[in-house]
Length: 353
Image (tube, rainbow, N blue to C red; front, side, top):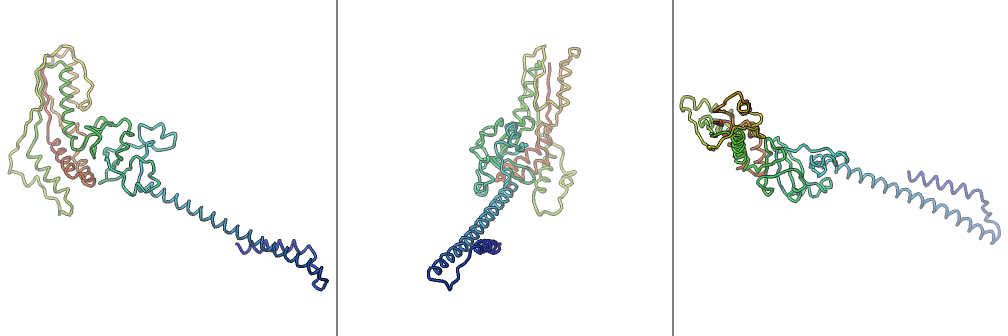
């Protein structure tokens, strides 16, 4: 290409100069002087053509080099965006309006938030500049990893008991509340007991009692089976239930969580329920108490406790694996055990008017 350009420009110079008469070399000294000037002029045209061609080549090389570098940088940026999955403030649900204006997809908040320092690969990537965190997949569960100094930017999110812990799991009902994984079941137990206490006050009860009854035999069987299921490289799982068949008598562990005598009143109101708003037994209790034609004196509700925890046994197994990958081994085991405990526990709510 450069050679062709040079030949074309050289031709232009040659044609241009050929229109001028080159003096005969046999003429006088004066004529020879004129000839030398013409030759210099002609040679200068050739040099200019060569310089123009070289400059054009250099410019083309630079342009192509810059274009290649840009395309390479764009490809790296796109690859890092896909692999490193950075999260920006505009992607948060609390900034949905801003996100739509900037054509940014709004993030669906994952069940787990992990407070973690920004690692080297995310720090060095241009795709992660100005990010507040990143998404990752841990044992099949999507996790939002947030950098500590960006926690305040998670508008509308509340952390319990504070935002200084490491791993949080979302409340089963209040989706803007994230609870420290090690406090999760303890906090939910307190919240549910308090809600049933408030229900008794609102309905005008004279007495209520909250009892937890756990089938300990079935619980132990479930724990052993879950433990075997979490161990990798094991042979076919044994039937733990069969091992215990006929060897143990059913036993229940009973815990009275709260029992109170109240003054009672004859003007019942329906409280705003959170954890038991969809429970059929509780809804039936409220209906019967609010019906003035029904002179309800007392009622006992039997509630499957795990229905209001938000974590099933299959979820718990995946969560345990995810937490262990994030370095919270003991917390993961606790989640599994507590889930199994709730699955084999019945909440009995006794209320009198």
